[in-house]
Image 1 (cartoon, helix red, strand yellow):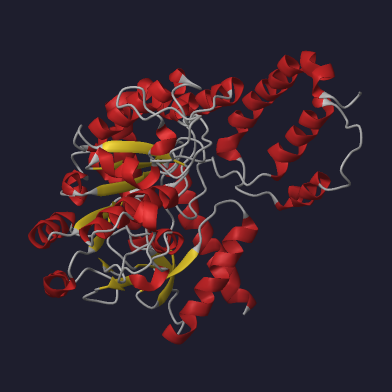
Image 2 (image 1 turned 180 degrees about the vertical axis):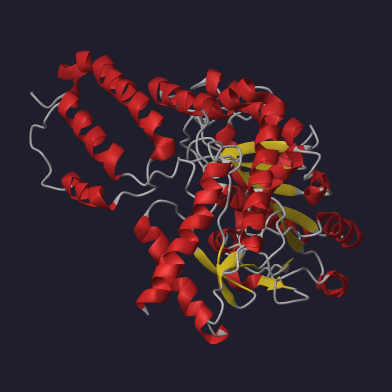
Length: 477
């Protein structure tokens, strides 16, 4: 049959070669491309059409995808994508991701890929060394920080139910009281989503804040824990609007004093541990019961890649193992079946890009990246403070810069709408990408500088484009 891939097996190497040949020009152009080019937006329509009957063949399909993708993609792996918190992919990580697709390993079981399982074990050990976590912690790679939060909080749920005499993995939540969960106003929607998926409810979290920024009220938390019974605390290592951190050391003290479980959402902020300059922001994380983070943010590996660490390795097996299925091998501490340590059964070999980037650049290279990004954030902060029409709204801690356009003579009552329009104008313009948020009741921009390619020229361009587009909005109103 014409469409059968068996008849096109000789095309595999040529198709990969096409991608490799396209990669050079694309990567060379990437630092200079607009984040989104509106002139090519119509190309996404070329993806559509009826399902082919016999198909166009390997070479034609891949050529078309390259033609459309290299032009119509959002160039979020480039240096001027400051929206959300999105890293790029280092050269080693990107090449290793191609290797991942080439080898196409089934990584849930040691039996199906000793290579992938051993790579994951090594990567988890290296990450614990890099991030200052105890070597005794258990761990697993996940698709994202949301899945990593799900993993850590599933272990917390297993622990909490056990305190009530219930094996929640076997019996479920029926008959149990609501699980007390406390955090600051910095708690991220991904933690709430994880609680929602675990059947605990996204609104179970009580955010105890001492101000409108969301900073933790430690004394109020201490009082609540005195009467709550077994509880779960969510500490936040990095808040997405202003970049602030919860006092993890104080949270760890409270958890020890009251016998609570401390989970730390360190989606991006955990990597502050890499540099002595910023490590104090996450002091105490080594005392947490569970920790979640993303690698596709500050570690700069391809999407998708997250990680979860748990103080008691047995908690992972308790929450996710025990399948009692005859065709699956029993767990082993040395020959690890990682599908019994996290929510995924079918898993991609996402350890390979992590292994490659850690092997390629080591501790020193990743420290340099963390410190460079902080320097770039501080540079942007200076540009803002020197500009008569920009206003810095939050202290700069790592790489998030929270500010707004505030031209002289514009009433306070009009600034929110003006900055919303400016955020939309930035996206439409496409030269740089930065989105809006609401910080302490004010609409603001909050670019995140986390891509390994980003330079001083890029952050200077961001400030200039914001002022240019803001000025245009004033003249058209």
